Length: 110
Length: 114
Image (cartoon, rainbow over all chains, first blue to last red; front, side, top):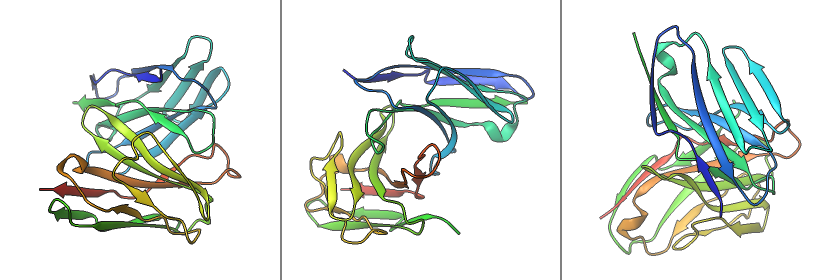
């Protein structure tokens, strides 16, 4: 079957670093996405990995290991505005077929 | 401004009363999708469209219909809504010719069926 797992909730301190993990089992794989979603708002695109390794974009980095079915999102220098849900999604074959995890709700406190 | 718009943003209706949620994008994207988001379940794809007049079922299509008569519009139709369709709905669009082909989401429609 198809499954994407990520922790339900995490907490972290302002200025710190947090790593959000995602493991997946899908019938096909054509890339992994991370989205950020603030409460009551639309998801917004953060990162995309299709090859193994680390992609860095400012304070955010994303890592992929296809052989292990594993990804993580690393957030550095946490700010209060980073309090949001982080969604892991796998493109399963076709360009328009995205399978989402349930999301990780991150709370950043002072 | 490049965007995906949805209307209405909030809707309370009764069981069995047909409704349509509109979705429009101004980015000339080929691909469009509808998702529903429920607590603990994440985003689940209802229907998607690869281009005009080309649609297909996602993971949870029961009780929904879609049409794609124009490239920019992708309405979601609930012929006979039921309380289990109470949810937060998102429309999204993307294009295969642009980078990671990431999906751009509309602002969401919160639907309550009583």
